[in-house]
Image (cartoon, rainbow, N blue to C red):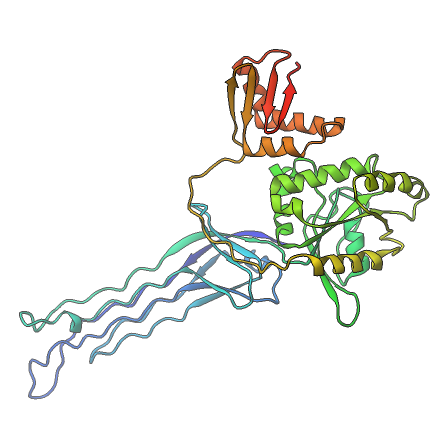
Amino acid sequence: MFIDSVIITVRSGKGGDGMVHMHREKYRPRGGPDGGDGGRGGSVILQVVPTLNTLNRFHHNEIFSAENGKNGGPSNQSGKSAPDRIIQVPPGTIVYNDETTQLLGDLVNPGQTLIVAKGGRGGRGNQHFASARNQMPLTAERGEPGEEFVLRLELRLIADVGLVGMPNAGKSSFLAATSNAKPKIADYPFTTLEPNLGVVELDEENSLVIADIPGLLEGAHEGIGLGHDFLRHLQRTRVLIHILDGLSEDPYEDFLTINQELSLFDEHLGRLPQIVVFNKMDLPDVEEKFESLRERFAREGLELLPISAVAHTNLKIVLWKAHDTLKRAPLEEIEPEMPVYRAEEDPRGFSIEKEGELWVVRGKIIERAAAMTYWDQPGSVRRFQRLMSGLGVEKALRQAGIEDGDTVSIGDYELEWQD
């Protein structure tokens, strides 16, 4: 079982107590204070280990505690500090405070560490409280309590190339045929319920790391079909191989749907270079409709490559094309995501204003969706209408008093309202 999101509790150690003690020595009845300091409590630290690629180890262990520091002793002896509790995590682990949703860190580079619960400071012994007025202080400090937090760890796979497409398009078969991965493969939608990583050896010097992301459904950016859980794994990739199902009724419509879901979830995903392939060419019915579909993509300036994951047809061509595209793609060093403090804004929110005879709708998702909609394609328009309904825009316009024939402005587009 692949686990890519877990909730854990971390507890750092309490600092050791400082000691109250007076020095005792023959002929020195008032030797003065010599109580030692307590040791520091252990911190809980996350550390990136590049050989790990899942969060499975956290499934059976949800509480991680560090030890307390030792108490101070006489003769100015400080207590021993406790060792830190090191928790190993895979590259691509993002850490949130589960209670406040605050982003604490983004762990991507080997050896990178993040202190998630700082150990308590050791208490000071009474030696620190002596003064001219109080030369025999009976005062010391107890150790500082440790910290306890509930954390949410999310894993974003780090791969060069991501496979995207509708459910049952053949992504798992492609990965199995080209790499050392062994994904579960069957003949029904949503076979892949967890992401898979595979290493593709092109030759002795060149290789690719490919992530097979489960099939996306319309509405994935809203979490439909576990969309959020899967889409975040694509955010580390630099090139996408878009696999179209040759048995689909409308592969081109599928292509538009997937790209819209990618861009609605993250604008960066919509800008990634794509290699578009038409799978299942080993089937006669699929082969017959390839030419017309290739011409349709060509009119949009896109190249469509025919493949068969089952028959291993043209797979090397696609992989080398991905490799060449990857070399040309700008190499962006993975920057850890840092906390950004801003007023929370609901990306699904919107506003409606009446400006003269025009109804103006403003909102991040609805405006972006309008800009991405192919208005000359009925299916794309229907998706936009469903999105308006799902966001509550349609209902809000009716409640505001819109009438048949009124004009609605969304971004750069003006639409005529029809009941």
